Every structure is written in C-alpha cells, then in structure tokens.
Length: 116
Image 1: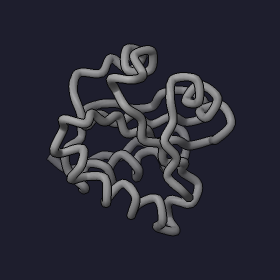
Image 2: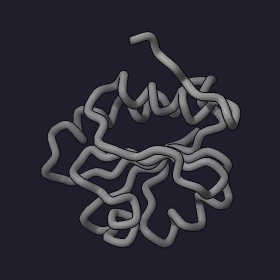
Image 3: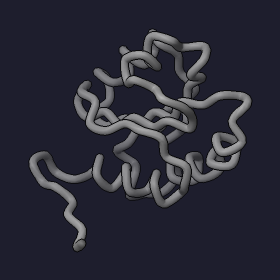
C-alpha cells in the first residue's frame, strides 16, 4: 500500500472508502515525527499490512481532524475501521506503531491481552 498525504476533506472520504486506515498526524517542528517517517513508510510496504491504508497529515494544517481525534501532541496516530475511529494517541516508537497496526488487523470483537 502506498503512503498518501491527506487533508481534512480527504480523511473523511478515505475512512469510508477504505476498510482499515492509519493516520499519522505530524508537525514540521517535531523531531520524532521525522524519525518515525521511514518506519511508517516501511510498514506500508510489508505484506501483512496490505489491507491497511497509510495516511500522514499535517496536524497544524488540518484543525478539523486534529480536533476530532482530540490531538494532544505529535506524533499522534489514529486508526479507523470501516469509518469508525478505533484507537488514537501519541506514539513515539516503531514498536508502538506496529502494536496499533496489529490491533487494527484483529477480527472484530477480539481483544489483544498481555500478561501482567
């Protein structure tokens, strides 16, 4: 799957056209955002994520989407399943992105539990 930069209008359309979407909200002044860009692009090419649409967007240039997900800082990620937000929050590691993708790919109704 390719990575396509989107905006407020395109996000609304995309989440209803595609079954699974992960959005990366970025800011030009965010060094972690820049650091995670290669990982985000790498995940988009991995076969296990073929069913996921990867979409980065500027948090500052897209206030409607940023407000909708209650953006608290960057890098901020949101996942959508069939047009409905599934999960969102600040993620600052490659492992964190992979964990969000794993949860997004789980069949509906199944939870991921880890031992405490």
